[in-house]
Amino acid sequence: IDVYAADKPSIVMYPNPVKDELTFEFNSGKSGSYNLYNTSGQLLQSGKLVNGAGKSTEKITMTDYASGNYILELVIDGQQSSGIVIKQ
Image (cartoon, rainbow, N blue to C red; front, side, top):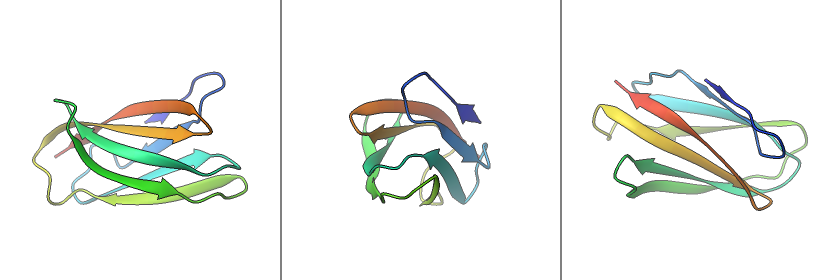
C-alpha cells in the first residue's frame, strides 16, 4: 500500500496483509519516529527513524499481534502520515 499526501512523508508498506514482518519505506532526509496502534488507539510499538538521504527502510515484527487491522503512523519533521496494516 502506498500512502501519499502533499507535504507529508510518503509510506510504502509491504506485504500488506502481513503475517510475520512488515517492511515500510519512506522518503526523507530527516529523522523522525513511527508508532503502531491497534484500532482502539492503544500504542503497541514505537521507534525512531534514522536520518538518511533518499529512501529509508524499517521493519516491524508482527508475530505477537492478533489478526486484525492496525495503524502505522510516521512523524517526520512535524508532519504526520498514517496507513492501515492488515495482520493475517
